Image (cartoon, rainbow, N blue to C red; front, top):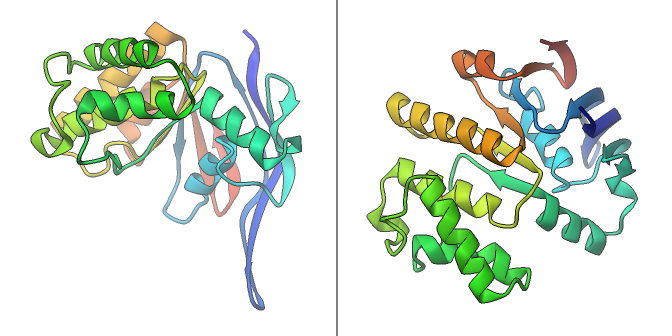
Length: 226
């Protein structure tokens, strides 16, 4: 099994006037391709910051993140945007769907922005919506869908360009337990079907125990890898 991500001495510091906050304090982590990882820890431990760095949404203060052996932060901002759009899918607690568009149009959107041919984008979006159990809901707008269905649309949207890495930051934090379990089961199925490297931030210890690896952050440092 080959390494997809190699994180070395990763630090992130925010400075506001005279105030300095060290959010991440030297993270070292290796994740193999096609694996699942739960990222756990108390609020403020640095979980979301780490996810943003792994997905190239932000740059570290120091340290490196290598993707297939290449340090992604040696890229300029334009190159980093291309890398992010092609290789990383993001799912957040709030789905951020565009309310005026249908489920199908929402899923197609990232592919169209990346200039994928419309027919190809539509086919990919239809397949993904079927995969997430919404084959009969493609023409519905977000306001006509339940919370769990909206999050499934967001997951399909995150995968429409075929990323290798899927980052999910508390993806069911605003859903009830039964709906959450359904979304997590669907994510597990997609991870296997598409051989994704999946990283989930969660407070759900039961879910974390089902992941291949659990990484615990405490005060910006890795306390434990299980």
